[in-house]
Length: 231
Image 1 (cartoon, rainbow, N blue to C red):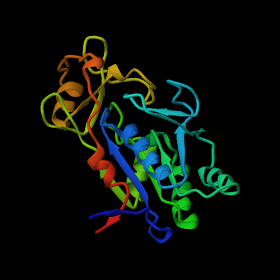
Image 2: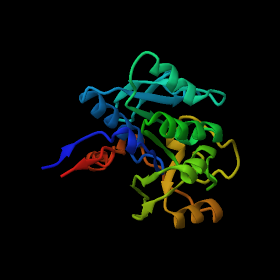
Image 3: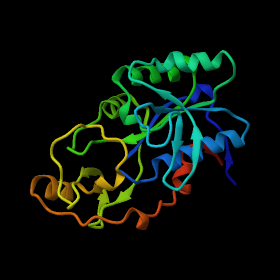
């Protein structure tokens, strides 16, 4: 029988759980936070301040789960933010939503949380933007992370979706625009690499799906991988 345990300080790592859109990243983060609390431990949650779809300092999944979090900006020092909380209480894990929006400096600060404070850090985010380019935060999490895990979702072609396209109201790819566009999930479609080339470069039209028809995948098995265990 498996006995769950939180990794001790000597096992603290920087984890990056990445995927295309709608793979259940936020749900998985909130499930993980719940597991820590259930064991009498305190998870510290961060979310980018620019993500204002709901309200500042709230992480909310598409299926309605939510939790309070510290809203961070590009200029914030996350290492100092964690140390400030440590002045008042223990922190057993740091969880970062929409981690693609981290700056290079902030990813470095999270490595300091792991290496100097001995606290595991779990980051959840997209790997690439709608043009197929790495986000700044994702680039350095991929470079500096101790453990990289892909959360899987499916392209409408039936293949594994690894990329994202931003489309107009008619389902054609938008090739220009700001890298950051919060909300409007219906304008983003997760696709395979092959389909990304067809849509982004060759002008193929995508049939848009009503968001109400999209169901959150079951990630309880993947959640188990977030906490190490021993037989």
